[in-house]
Image (cartoon, rainbow, N blue to C red; front, top):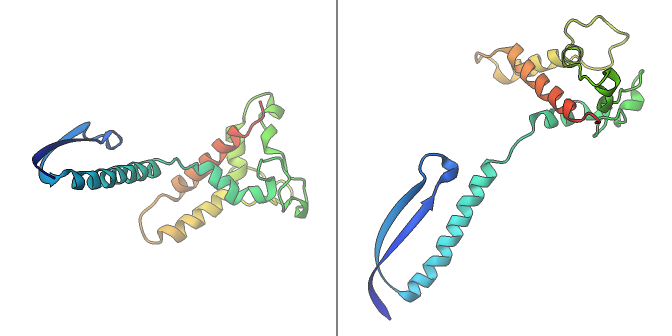
Length: 173
């Protein structure tokens, strides 16, 4: 049964975009109710898919955790307790990273750890089984950026600080 023109008012909420709060959209359609019943589920599906895309785009990435699992977990273990699959192959025991602050009077020694992991200002201590990640990161940056202008020290520092912030979050209370 055909009904005349119907007015539909759609409010599209775009709060995640931060640009517009509501956009009123006025549409005049000459359709029967059967067509409207078919359009409503498709419209709901479209809105659901748009919300899913926005939620997927807002997924947080934990760079420090990713860095730890890519560079450190093989020796220090998934939880940082020094029991990684490569720890038995090393000449020195792999330290438990979760007790650094506890063993330092409750203070997380950020500067000392930064220097140790980056290889800066640390006198040679034995064989240095742990890679000098500061140098590794600068080499990775050079391979990635090639001839584009970039700051290798800033690139290395950002990755090291993300890693150390994650290790800080691993500390036992």
